[in-house]
Amino acid sequence: MSPLKQLLNEQLSLVAQSLASPQRLEILEYLSQTERSVDELSQLVGLNVANTSRHLQVLKQAALVIVRREGKKRFYKLTGNDVTNLITSLRKTAEIHLAEVERLMHSYISYKDDLEAISAQELLDRSKNDEVMVLDIRPEKEFHAGHLPNAINVPPNELLQRISYIESDKDIVAYCRGPYCLFSYNAVEALREKGFKAQRLEDGFPEWKAAGYPVQHT
Amino acid sequence: MSPLKQLLNEQLSLVAQSLASPQRLEILEYLSQTERSVDELSQLVGLNVANTSRHLQVLKQAALVIVRREGKKRFYKLTGNDVTNLITSLRKTAEIHLAEVERLMHSYISYKDDLEAISAQELLDRSKNDEVMVLDIRPEKEFHAGHLPNAINVPPNELLQRISYIESDKDIVAYCRGPYCLFSYNAVEALREKGFKAQRLEDGFPEWKAAGYPVQHT
DNA sequence: CAATAATTCAATTGATTGATTGAATAAAAG
DNA sequence: CTTTTATTCAATCAATCAATTGAATTATTG
Image 1: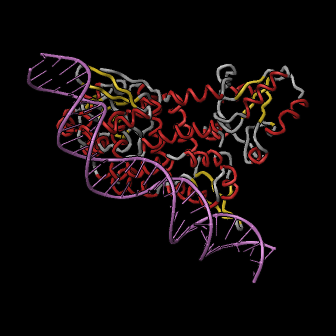
Image 2: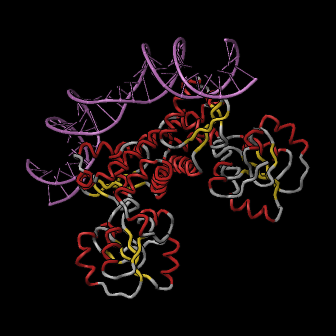
Image 3: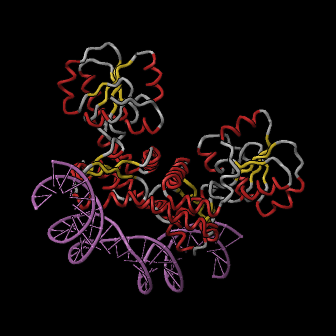
């Protein structure tokens, strides 16, 4: 191997190494929604602060996250959309080729086949003609950190109450954190029971944003 | 972490783990050109056969490669274009954010800034009007496993002789194995010295193919 | 100075494990 | 039955080293 390739590949393998941990992948998942402080993350992923901090150092060294300081807290966020793309790419590859992943997806998300999803482009087209109502099924905080244009936030824990108030003759599209997030599945199921025409967005908010589609901040 | 996410992330981390090795990354680089037998690969990357075989098992377990048997030999190839995309994604992320990678790129490829490259889409547009001559600077074997439409193969070791025979008033675009391959840089440099108007294609053949652009087999 | 937030340190656990090689084995071809 | 090709096995060397935790430390705010 040429010395250049050797050195470059060592760097790449370092980045890959930083992704080779279920805990860190989960941290990145939370960060792909919005920036978070260390102790917020430590609660979300269920690790203690010291350990969480350690994992974040590893990700920082691989240049996947950066820190911002604000008062006593430090907020970590992804270094860019390309990080989301990288993880999406990793997921897609695993999903396509790893039988085990397919099996898992099906055993947990038996809807997957039934509720065929709408693509980002399709949603965008239909939105232009004001044909659809878009629901963001994520906690309020993540919604405010960025969401689809004209999306209405319905936090997952308020789903059932809120659905009763919905009045619309438009089709409904729901999305949430990403392909492995169950919020939007639950929402679509509940909406259909109420008689609405509802569909899931193929991917979640991070993928939408990373693909360069418009994002609104409210 | 929910049991589903836990299990899925364990699978993803397995795939990432398989990428966390300079040797395996190099193997994948060679496989992204065309399928290869074990001993062919072992020579290319400079590892003995047993060791190369072991690395290939790891990649196979991560579902990044598959084997085809033909007589006494076993040919390994990537499971799909998404694998190339995954590696491209990994590279892009490292390139954008890791200072070390940038430094390496610049110290070895000082041309990078000078010889600004042409994008895939741009090349395709200009090709339609028959404005450009496309050169494939890779070994003959890789060329025959697939190349850009109407590309002319100029193996790197024959570069200097072959250039003397080129007669053309069209602009020339050269490409090779990928962004870290130096063949096309050398070609462009040599061509310019001869007075041609020559440019590099931004990425190499694997990226072209993975992006879904047309591929020709000769 | 006290309280809060996060990092760093030292130590433990637990695990591996990861790359590598020579030798044995298997599978196919002639 | 021999040759070729690749896999698998057993063993070695080399590391690590990775995740985790409690305690000490640093930095900031009030």
